[in-house]
Amino acid sequence: MQLSQLAAALLLVVSFSLTLLSAEPVKSGLQPGEKITTIFEPLNITGEHAGEPYCLICENGLSPVAMLFAREVNEPLLNLLGKLDEATVKNRDQEMGSFVVFLNESDALRQQLAAAAKQRGLKRIVLSAYAPAGPDGFHVAADANLTVVLYREHEVKANHAFRRDELTAAASEKILADLPKILTK
Image 1 (spheres, rainbow, N blue to C red):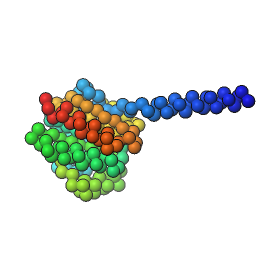
Image 2 (cartoon, rainbow, N blue to C red):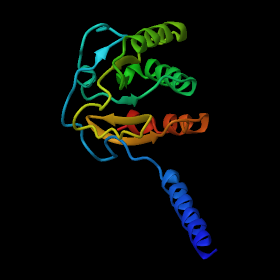
Image 3 (spheres, helix red, strand yellow):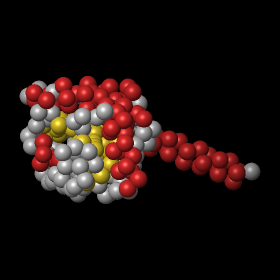
Image 4 (cartoon, one colour):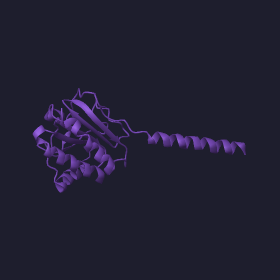
């Protein structure tokens, strides 16, 4: 009988530990205060350079930028992209840029993204694709479904990272609330 109680207690401790670990926020991408020191060329799916590998960090120069790394397309993400696109259009006077790098190189994803951009009327945000591991030097965590890095003059001002199903409307609003960090000097 004692052995079964010990096993039950051990199972409880393991379950509790796993719950605590999953509650920890995911850390992914460059963090506030860090500088972007390298470039990469994702395959652009939309934008001026659609269909070709092109450096979006280079394209945006020292301007304020919302750079996202995503692993899948879902409704909460598409809603966020629509709002970031609106902010990018609204802040053209500050030359704000925005782009998403989908860490998936499948042809089906490219077609899905092109259709979603057209259907949603995305004007300025560039959708692109890159290898699943993400670009070297950007520290995109494997368990992060979405990483948002807001930067200006290549210095990160804000970072938000989410596991699968963690991006909510409230989380999107927190991201949008951080835009002034890159839009004002």
